[in-house]
Every structure is written in structure tokens, then in C-alpha cells.
Length: 141
Image (cartoon, rainbow, N blue to C red):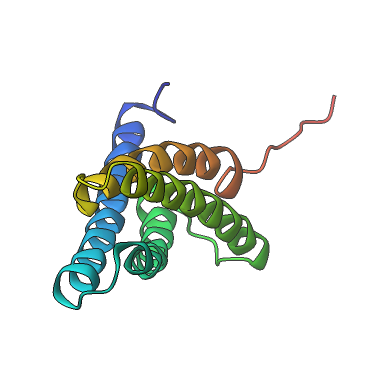
């Protein structure tokens, strides 16, 4: 997969994706660790709050840093993002739950890392080709 735009723009795009994804990942991990590790909330329940919080952080960061959207947010864009985010979150949670239930010796944070990587790939493709895609301009013949 090639970077969008020229080299500098492509580097900024991927750096924005890494920073945005990292911010969401750290938020996810921190909320999971706080709820599960400190407050004793079961990992399958704690993860729901962690995903929801990380989703908001990811929305704000990806919109600005990864895709450099300068236009005001629209309801249509938000609905596309929310649909993609919940689908990716469902994938993330399902993989997390599968690991936790099938391999109970795996620490919840390790299960979260694996499930998050899979969801990250699905999210990027959805954001790039759906949520934040640039409208196509058609030239008259």
C-alpha cells in the first residue's frame, strides 16, 4: 500500500495515523487497566468502557492528524465514522473475548493488543476509503 499524496504529505499522513492510533491505544489500555486492575471490574465489562473512551479519542485525532480534515464535521461523516467505529469495536471486542475465554492464562492487556491490531487494520481501511475519503470530482468531457 502506498502512502497518499507526495512523500512529505504521505509521511505526515502515516505519522498522524500512528500518533492517533497510539493515543487511542493508550487511552484504551489506561481505562482497561484502571477499571480492571485498580477497581476490579471484570475485563469483559471494563473493555466496553475502554473501547468507548478510546473511540472518542480516535475520532478527534484521526479527523485532524491523519486525514487533516479542515471542513466542519457533518452528520453524514459522523454517522459513517460511528458505524465504522462500532464495527471495528465489535471486531476488537469479539477477538478480545475469544482470547480471554479460550485462553484464560493470557493477560487481558495482551489480548487487548492482539484484538486492537486486527481492529486497527479494519478501521484504517474504512476511514481511508469511506469516512474521510475525498469527494471525487468529475470533469466534463
